[in-house]
Length: 182
Image (cartoon, rainbow, N blue to C red; front, top):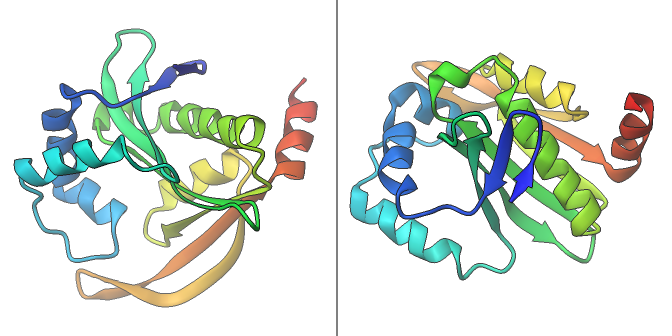
C-alpha cells in the first residue's frame, strides 16, 4: 500500500492474526509496548481486535511487511486524531526480533509520518515511549522526533519505576528534514 526502502505498510489480513498474537504475547515485546501489567492476549481477543479495526474512522492500523520477502514483521498505527488541533498520536512495534536494529522500524515510521503529513494534513505527530526502551527513543529521534517532556517515574516494571518520554515532530520539522535530505 505505502512503500519505503525496506518495508511497506498495508492493511492487516486474517492471516496476520496468529503471527501478531505470537509477537504481542512475547514477554519482551509486551514489556516494551505497554505500561500495563503484561498479560497474555487470547486468540478470540485478537480476532475481536481485528474485526474492530475496519470500523474505526479516527484510527488507522497498518501491518508492516518486508519488501524483500513479504514477511509480516509488526505494525504501526495512528491511535488517535485531534482534528481541531491537528495532532495525531502514533505507535509502532516490530515483533519479529530478527528485524530489530536494522532500520525496518525507522523505515516504517518514516512512511507513517509522510502519510500523516502529506495525506491527512496534520500539523503534529506525538508518541509516548519509555525510558528503558533506549532503542525506540533513538529510532524516533532518527525519524525527526524530539523529546518534549518527561513524565517522571510513571511506569513500574520489574520492581523499578521508569519515566515516560513524550516525543513529537511538527510538519515544519518534517519538511525541513525532507529538504535537507535532497
